[in-house]
Picture (spheres, helix red, strand yellow):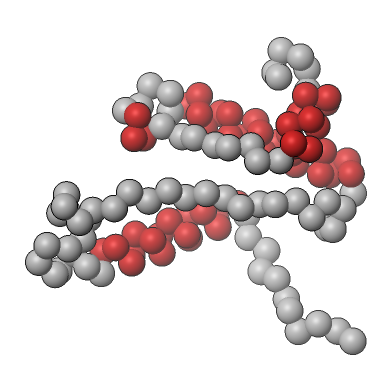
Amino acid sequence: MESEYSPIKLSRRTFLTGSAACLIAARLTHLGQPGQGLLNPQTAKRLYLAADDHTDYLWTADEATYRQIFQDMLDYQLDRVDATINNPIDFQARWNCDGWLRLWTYEKYKPAADF
């Protein structure tokens, strides 16, 4: 039996950009109301975006592909942290590597200097 579920394939950048746009649009809808929205420090809220990209290991690719994806993901996140390190603290990138397999893979397959 064929599933009716058809996943939409988006790049991480497209997903995050779209998610941020939705959050901003939701907050902007309150700008016209007195005492509401992003411009009022009493009601402004801090938004934290956290990617939840748990790993269904070997679900959609082989080990070599996952190994490369893990390394690319950590490199990307570390580059974002490095690129924003001199920004004010509220504008610095942060990331939590929440999977031991990713970190183990990074350590095992990257040059020691990268780790």
